[in-house]
Image (cartoon, rainbow, N blue to C red; front, top):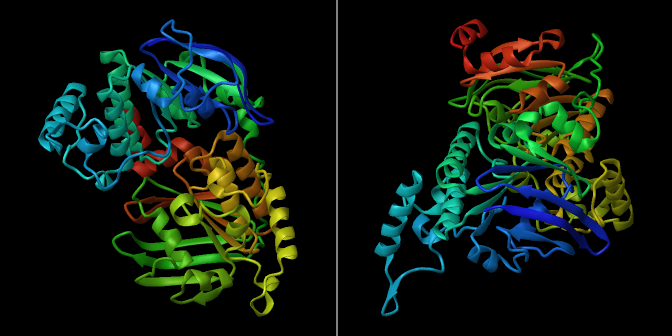
Length: 503
């Protein structure tokens, strides 16, 4: 299916989400939509899928110039949208989800066997590897996304919009999803619109790219004509080298704020010896499952160690809880803001105040005026884009949700900050703001320990990097030794010479 976006605009009250955007999506292509949060890429995907209606212009589907008026009409035209927040019935089977609302029945009784038989035929036809009897809640996010794709294909979808499909996936799951998308585009001629802020994924999977900036069309062209540097420059209007702030190493006389000796929690990790000085940014690199997150959780008291020592400012800290860790000056921004860090259905103010401002609540009474002033100060200092601090966190973009999570912990004035995947699920512009925030923490003398799956992020930010593999520390790199390729090979357990010799 070919799509022509013809002079499309979309306004939400006084907010302009898209302004006079025009480009073409070729039939059978994998067409990437990239841009910062707020650039309009998800809005455009929803317009194409009939979820939203344009304020001006139109979307033309295979020469038919009338924008789908609803998701139902879009489905009837062969268009499906797989949104970032998957819409599946978790307690039903895979087959039941795929055919939900179209179940076969005899004399009022559902024919589960017919659904299952149809599912097996559909699955085999498209080369998926899913059990139709499996309960959706038992599946990984990657497999749940494949259920959504199969649901779309069962409705004869010729165009599938994937909105941030890899934001919660492991590298292996991403490879599997990309393989499915490529196969469907090549063998079935299915057209994909791929919305993502992951530049490396976009460059890997897409054959054509459309770049949006502040709701306007910047350019459309072949992916082969782009690099990470040119994409970032087009998206932001500045160079990739400007994303990371200058590194300012701590002085040699800086005191050690955090240290561990022989820290162990089997089977996750064993004999971890690390230290972080005041004003130092230290990273932990390694593959998913290497034990990185578990080390941070243990330091923060979310999990108990089996043996080993933890010291803060040189003083030993025994078995402790997160509450005790906070009293010791620790803060932890967890890996998943949605499940571990924020209450999405509560306001920005409520989330920030959750673990803070005890001094503003003498005798259990809350000083709302002073609390509000402090919350607004943090919202302004982190450049949160929100109508007010009373807005629900669920209404914010991923980047602004992450800023709320940072504000929640930084408002407690910690001296040690633990960051687990601090820029997961945010676009390149929000990442730049977070990087500057982290560098600012170090300049104020705060010790920062970061876990990240993005090696470029660690290399761009950190003064030192520890490398973990299979639960153990296998190396350490100082500022003048940090290099992405060498760290990756060490994480994989492959020497660079061996890798090069294998082609």
